[in-house]
Length: 395
Image (cartoon, rainbow, N blue to C red; front, side, top):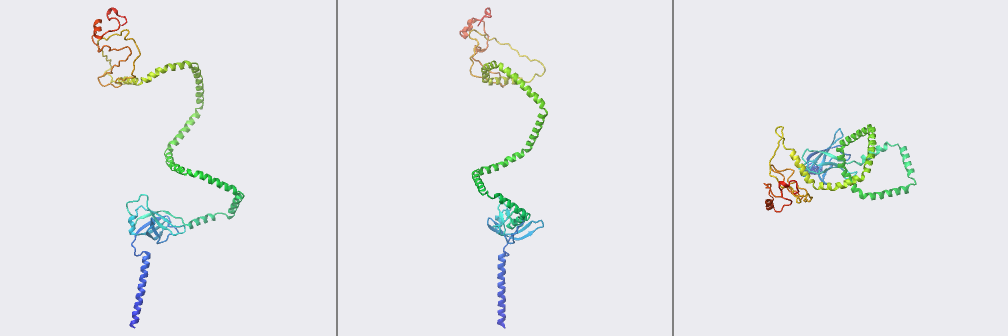
């Protein structure tokens, strides 16, 4: 009796141990003993093949699983994820979410996609993420195809297919040649695809610029319409203007035609003068600039006329033949400090080889009417001596 009781207890203990082992194995398989971090994903839909315990992956590595799926009245799906704590610090808080499948018929899983600019903050417990994309299942495609086929009338479909068959009958060679020509065209067009792609990419800023300028373009078109309307309203005056212009052109042709040689000779004669003016344009600019500065002098404090006069010693008169006029100046234009002279100063005197030199004998001074003294002081001087008895003579 004692031995039978021991055997009963032993059997009961064995059953309990086996049950405990099975429970622990099931718990390990389901992750009941694994610590997890809750994260929520909101999606427009979960898909038909999204199940509890589906994997959550990032870069092909499982970082969690789907703990539960909740459906809302508006059709939105809420996926409660159980994330592995050891992987949380590797996932940025702005991670993207896709609900995808490895194959068309395969079960879906949650894919975490790293963003282009990862956040410095890691994914944390209780965070809510939005799903960006949900893969379309094959049964959804079949459903849509069935709905499309359901709207078609079989008789009309049969007639359409018969008409297509009749249209294609006996034209196989032409269709084959058309496909061959299309292949040749695509082969020639294929090298231009990179350039076309680049042009399409560059067209975006061009269209954006046109979009920004659309208001101005519309206003320009509106103004052009008004201009066109004004031209239409003033067409009689415009006709009169054109007729007058034609008459003026006829008169001008007569005038210019009759005087063509004279005008040509005049322009030829003016060419040296204009060339000289062009050469001395800087000097003329300085001169007119000086006159402009002089015109800007402050007015008198009271309306009046101010006269500044002084007596200076007389200079030498022109003598023959030394002071005969001649054109031998060289060196181009000289501004001599113009157009803006410093305060309390005057422009320098430019002495050129023109037969006239107002300071030929130095600074102005008292000149005695004694030719021998002048010959002694200044050397041989052209012309007769200067005295009152010879006034009016050359020299």
